[in-house]
Length: 234
View (cartoon, rainbow, N blue to C red):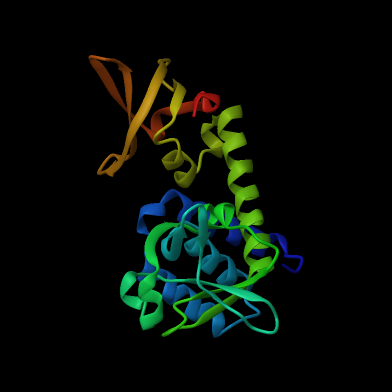
């Protein structure tokens, strides 16, 4: 990626964190929409990152064939380098010769971890219909930028955030974490923020304090909040 201005980087950070927080909204149809927007404007960095966010968070279909200990994937041999085929759904698999392979679903980072090869130079999404072709080097480069953004945010959560720096998106991302909260009215709350919601009173985390007690904490009540989850156990 080319060097970005502070404003461009801020927009990319917000887009990345929004998508990562709402990972469950990333679908094959949304991926096709974002890839189409990017391929129509290849020099737009924000559209590139938007497409890559969705590519990273959408479950894709890949094909394998296992014979004994050997596992193979169908590839497209082109002069520029081997191309890995991926699909947004099983319906996108049109070629008869691909029926010999077993379709499986996973996130792209996990697929690349399992089938990482220097010989694979491109990925193609829906080769028989949309044929979105992306250089593997670009995919890995943008994925690294995205992971660094998320890693930096998670580090901030673990340091603790005061009310004036607590954005709506950041507060939402504390859902699912073990939190330590000091409220403006003097309460000290420690527990698992197992649920997040937004109602007429605003953004809210439901925190389990004990097996029999839980408490709702609204964003506007927070003085400081910190992620104290033990990630080493995961």
